[in-house]
Image (cartoon, rainbow, N blue to C red; front, side):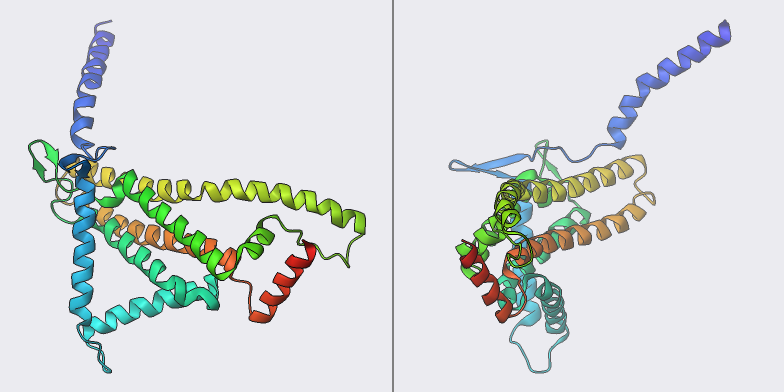
Length: 291
């Protein structure tokens, strides 16, 4: 009985001490950003400040790297050109050759901005600098407001591109139109398929509406989780233990920037990319004849 009592006492003491240890080890990023100050009615949070600083640094670094473009590129110009060519080659088959150059500024800006914002959480001082008890520096993408803003910008840009380069008729046909060939199936079945494709179109509209939600939650969840993981590892052991997780966050930051950019490219390409001009004309004619 005495051994049982000692065991129970030890477990009770461990359970009491565990939350305190967990609180120290898992001292991470708060789900809500910290309000630093107000500019009139506009609240300025720590994540907003980090986003502005990163955006300004990106502009300055790229301008310094390129300076005046030369026929024989400098090392900085070669790096920027490699990034530009790599992203353009990646998105062109997805969005289609007709809109690749038009969508390229948006997509490369999304990829570069999200990538550097994701990696900003690895910089010294991020998440560890406090002023009057408030966290001063917080990764922009570790704040849901930041990722929602990126998703909404992408959604509005998607809507503009498909209306500008595909047109309302083709958009409506792609979502609600009957894609069956009237010559290959019985007439009764063909007209019944109008109902089926319209129902599928309604489901597609719901999925389109939820795209900003999935984009923002995916990016926020990965960055926010990574920030808390790094803080937890640093809380347990500041030297050595967090190093492998820094490399993991480098990889995750790159993958999430790439996934976000590719998904926006796919959304645009699903409607704007229909192969060559001849195929586009036939598709548009087929859509108008069906309607």
